Length: 246
Picture 1 (spheres, helix red, strand yellow):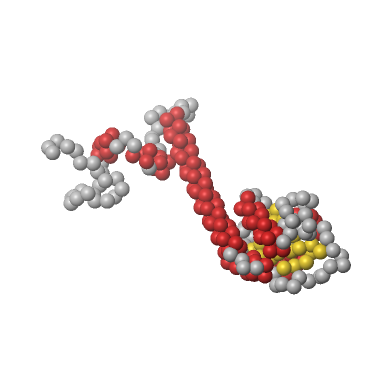
Picture 2 (cartoon, rainbow, N blue to C red):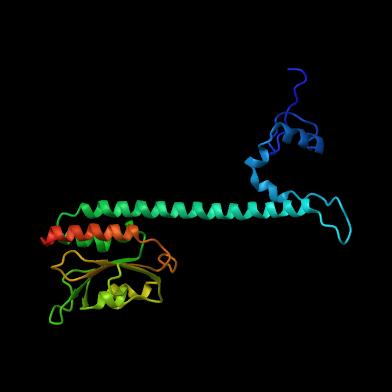
């Protein structure tokens, strides 16, 4: 239609044959007037706006420049915050998917021995860690070794000593794990997640222990809801296979 202005392409994509690849100020101005939401939709451009001062002199401040600079800095700060929130959201979703897969694997156990095998072998890959063990307290005159690989015996009171009296979990970076908890794999552990197991009032307390060679895999600032969900499921399965009272 005659008289209609063609908007320039500010993203560098050619809209047709042209002898002049540059843009003058007038065309840019016309584009912004026709597309008032362009800068809103492209906030990364705002920090690049640096208008020249309209005044000069030692005792004169250009408030326009000051405001524009602060707005640009705020856009940068908010973008960094958004990036961090998105990264945390992706990490939380990945952790949730891992725990759901672990729960389905546990519920597929055919018997107690198979359940322990899933926990101490299969969950290593499912949860993306380097070692997973089960620990249980025994009396002073009880056995000193468990009959299955991946299960370790702890002296009475050791769970409270490790976690804190009554504490449900402990997540932290460490320089090597406890040999009583991780066995031969203790030396490679650089961060750990320990979760209390209390299957029944009739059974001694225990631990679900996850160890990683990555120092930042587990730390004290992490949420523990997913791990506690996994341990509650494991407690129910132990009660079922061991015929323990609730």
